[in-house]
Amino acid sequence: DVWERADGSRQHLRWQVMPWWTDAASVGGITITVEDITRLVATQTALQWHERDLSAEIDALQALQSASRLLVGNEPGAIYRTILDVAVSLMHADCASIQMLGPRPGTLALVDSRGFHPASARFWQTVDLNSESTCGRALQSSERLIVEDVDVDQDLAGSADLDEYRRSGIRAVQSTPLISRAGV
Image 1 (tube, helix red, strand yellow):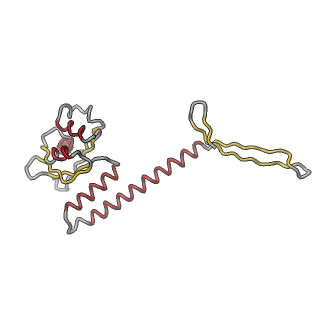
Image 2 (cartoon, rainbow, N blue to C red):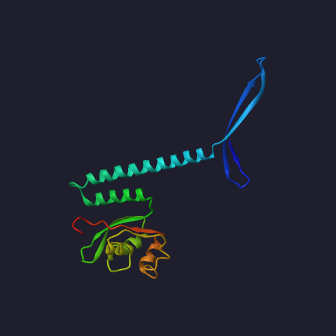
Image 3 (cartoon, rainbow, N blue to C red):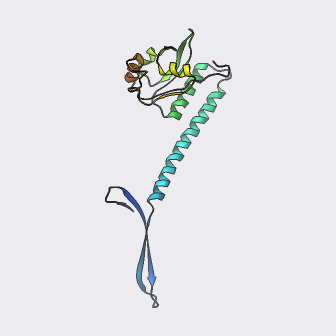
């Protein structure tokens, strides 16, 4: 049973009713035992959520493994799309992109994206590494960059990148540079 406490929280109770007998083999009364199982129910619910998340992550990792198998002798675009789909799934993201070093020195070129407004995708087609864009800043530092709220990030203030984040409905950003063993 679920009971509501005075503070509005819910309490989960388990009831057990047991008769007790007299010497004359008749019911002399009943014993009622009530056990508060609120923490047990919360733990079981949390476990179910974690199992679902873990299952989704395992599925995504298996897809990533499949994508890595595509690396041998296949069209790169299909590989990038698969990797991007897996990344979106793992990060529970609404938007994502893959960029590579561009054909011009000091630039990144958009390889594939998900969830961007079409104008934003065109804007980020080529990114100057010297700009204050999050991907440029991450690559310059060679470290993952997390911006929890684009509207309060000082480096984005007044930038065209901020306008594009807003146009695409992006509130938070994570940029992770993937650098080869050769440092590129």
